[in-house]
Length: 293
View 1 (cartoon, rainbow, N blue to C red):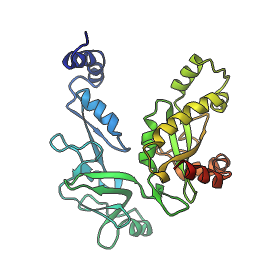
View 2 (cartoon, rainbow, N blue to C red):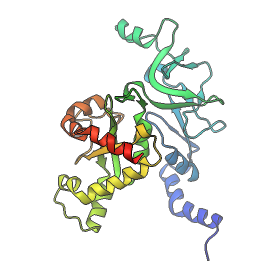
View 3 (cartoon, rainbow, N blue to C red):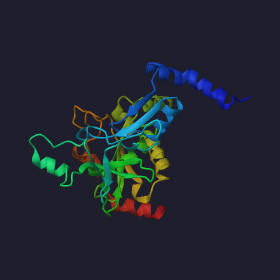
View 4 (spheres, rainbow, N blue to C red):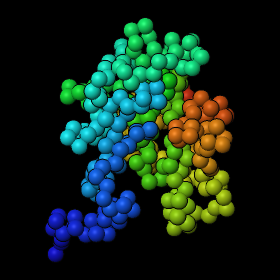
């Protein structure tokens, strides 16, 4: 006899959700999220656990809030509605512009940088790409400087795709490549805790992580994951090739920022040889994809 929804919910609360709330003190009313995108799946998990998680958005230059979800006005997948007293508009290229009393006066002793950030009408250029829906909720889609423009002039936002890849239990940190290229490829740092455990169960012998990522059976695991995601992606978004890296990106190596954002230009230069290999014989790859389409 199967347990009903109420019983399963009570069991989940007792075994998992209650422990999470206790770790947060036991009396938390809500949690604010910012600094990096919050995946809808993670937001839904916390809400299901009885923890009100509210995502917001802003920059240091905006003191620092522009938009925020609230208990009375929340939409998962957005950063909420614009806060009172602040104006937001979307530029023709999709960039989010903000104006209001929260905007900084300028960068200290740097009038050139100030003029680049704040236009003559007082609009601060955030550098983020986004949209405002009919109900006034703001959604961030990517960083302007991170947008991939492929060899055919198509714009591809990498962050939503990378967030999708991270939903795989095998993928730790993905970085999409493809600017001025014929197709999208990916550098992938595996979730080694999961991969090493499963590799041992599968009888895959390895002495180091270098051995592990070079193993054909391991590559097949990731190819299956990529194929699974590709089925729901547009043609220009499909990930055609990938490379597995034996270590994660670090702040010490100047590969990520203190807020754990990948420095794409640094990655492009540091891993140039690996990236170039992903595009060897790219014309043949395009021809194969055309036949599959």
